[in-house]
Length: 294
Image 1 (cartoon, helix red, strand yellow):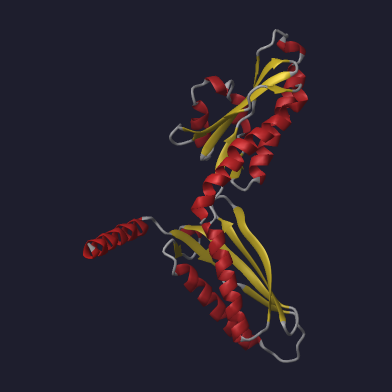
Image 2 (cartoon, rainbow, N blue to C red):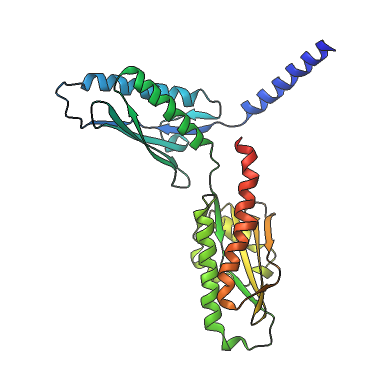
């Protein structure tokens, strides 16, 4: 029995290792950090600083390169998905500052931008600083890249008997507020990168009835997913809200939400829409991602 368990464990280890090796490593480019000494110390420490900075960069590259999830490449032209840049400044005898940023090359967005301070200017203090910075950079690289999301203009489905012409201008204004607020909430969440739909939003009409055509439009815009939303006016003081998210490549519905009947006039649509996407999309996705990050 013990031998069987050992064989099974070895087999599982082999399978898991094979799967890990099969996943393509993510390209990471890293420029040498700059160094500035404004401490005004009388002794010229240029040679020592150059040596320590060189050792710092070598260790940082070694730490990242040792992780099978990543591979070091010279630049974005060589397949870098992320770029690490930074600089170190010595401001006094015992105080140095390190500014480090990680850029998502494809999204053209910072996934990390931090300023650290560390004490000391000897080999040991530089080594401690590198270990800390290395952990921070690795954590930033492991953060899921934001999903490119094309948020199309929210549409109105008026179920009342009122004439559409009497409130068309105000309806359009309130719908624009809904769309703008939803885009802002999703963009600020960090989970999504909002793709500009531009003229496509004006060309596409009644996306709620086009059988998922918004996914193809989103793909042409370079988005990963599409989102359409509908405000259904039941009466002048009652409405419902709904949204649907599709995968731009497969056309599959990946998320949807419905508010149920809500009380409030048109000025409350914006608040209801932001609450709906926050509860059903942003927080739901964060809860899903949490176990993966452990």
